[in-house]
Length: 94
Image 1 (tube, rainbow, N blue to C red):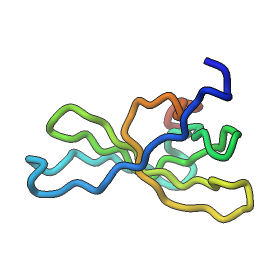
Image 2 (cartoon, one colour):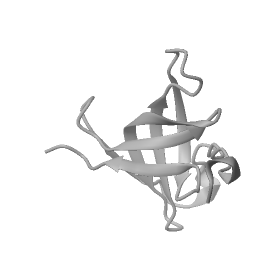
Image 3 (spheres, one colour):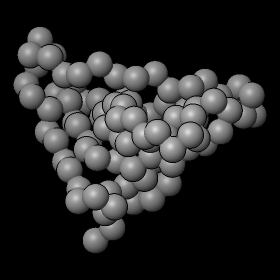
């Protein structure tokens, strides 16, 4: 898939009680978690994973901190994994 065909990833909505049991949440100390790349405004942007949520329906959602425009203004977003506009860049550090 060429970069012109990569869609920007869609943002997940937060978990709600109607979604079933609460998700299992995994967090990491700052700088120790995995890193994803998020396709945004025509470029891959590094996104620091703050938390992983494993929902009862089997889906996985990552809460990340990412500079979506390259202007040094980081935002927190949650994305369902996998999507074409997301890539795994680094596993958690021990």
